[in-house]
Image (tube, rainbow, N blue to C red):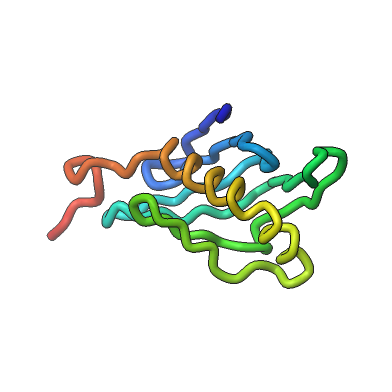
Length: 113
């Protein structure tokens, strides 16, 4: 995997990922309970020959990550085939994006009253 990460805040980060047939950027939002919400910003899922592909953006899906478990949720119906066709690479890219932004330690998080 190759990639870069840019902090937006303590709880959000833009992460660029290249993994197999998947290339692009995700917005990763962390919560206090160690889970992550991963949303594509500008993501390309290529065909097997990497000749052409389909672009995904923030309205096409949202994935949740808890530990090593990725739940993709609803995928835009017109793009569902492309996501399912590359599901192993897509799942690995989502997991890699979430790992590039570890959850803040409890002492770094929001203050409780």
